[in-house]
Picture 1 (tube, rainbow over the protein chains, first blue to last red):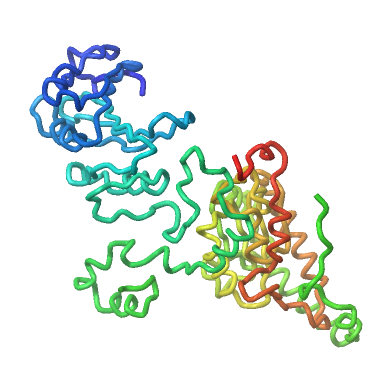
Picture 2: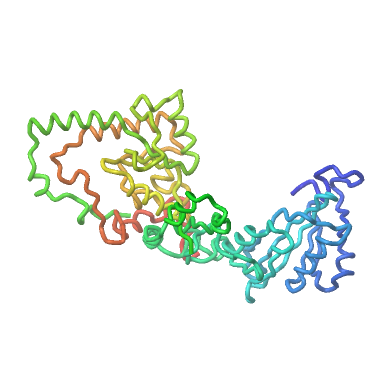
Length: 222
Length: 208
C-alpha cells in the first residue's frame, strides 16, 4: 500500500507521497459529526475510523458525492488484533477510478457485542464474496447480504471462525474427528447447481443439458 | 511417541496366508499379468499444488513417463490404474479423492507424491489432511517438497516392482478392509497418534 493517495494512475497535480485527498477528515466530520471516530495518515494513506451505526451512510456518501466518487471497492476484509481488548476491525479499501484517489475506512467492532455491520452489497456488487469470506473467516455478520454463506470452508464446518486470534491453528476437533467428518461429507453438496448459478438460467438451457442436470450429474436442484 | 502395533481386521491372518499354494500355472500367469499391468499403468493425476508442476514436468517430453507405459493420462477414474495425488489435500477435497478412488476399478494403486500428500508437510493446520493414507490406501510414498521428476519416476519404478511381486494366489491381494462402517482405513486412534504435533509446531497446541 505504498505510493500514497492518488499515486497510482498518474493523476496530475497530486504528489505520490502527499496525503492530500478530496476526502479530508474535516469534510467528513462536518458531514457526519461524531460518527467519525478517528482519522490518521499511515504511509501516505488516509484512514478513517467510523461508527458502525452510520457506516453504511458514510460509505454511500463516499460513493455518490461528486468529488468523492469512490466507485470501486478494492478490498473488504477484517483484522483481529492479538490484544484481546482491542476491537476487531472491518476494513474497506476504496478507490475512485475516475479521480484516482483512495481511502481506507475501518469499523471497529467490540468483541463483547454481536459482530454485525450493514452489508455494502447494495453499493458495490463486488462486496458479495468479500463479505462472505469475512463471515467465513471472522464470523462478522453482514446484515442485508443476499446470500451470506461460508465460501472457503464447507457449509457444515462447525469448528468456528479460523482467522480469529483465539482459534487454535489445528482447529478445535481432533484429527480423527476431522477425518471422520470429511469421510462422511457428500462431495456433491459442495458443488451444487446453485453454487454455479446455473440454476437461475435453467429454463434457457438446452434440452440435453437440462436432462443431465435433472439427473443430478453435477449436483442437485432443490 | 510409541506407535501401536498394527493389528485388527486389516492384517491378513497367518492361516489365510498358509492356506494357499502357488503352482506352475499360477506363477506363470502371475508373471504375464504382472508384466502387462506394471507396464501399462494409466495414471489418474490428482494435482492440487506445486507437486502437480513437477508431475507435469515428469509427464512432458524431457522425462517422459510414457516410457513406463503411462502414455495416457486418464482424467476419468473409470479408465485409470494408479491414482497419483500430487500436492496437499485439504479436508474439503478429501471426500472427492475418496469418491475418485472408489470409482476406480480394481486392480488399482495409489502414489502419494510429495511431503504434503504423505504427511501434511508444513501444513499442520485446521484445513489439511495429515497424510492421504487416512483417506485412501497408499502404495508408494514419494518424499520431497516437491520431488524432482527423478523422484517420482523412482516411485513409479518401485510401484512396478511391487506389482511384479503380486500373486493371484494371495486371497487378500485386492481386499480393501475398512476398520469400521464410517469409512476409515486406519483406526481413528492411530490417526490421532500419527498426527501428534512435532518439530516447531509443538507450541501450537489446541488450548492456545
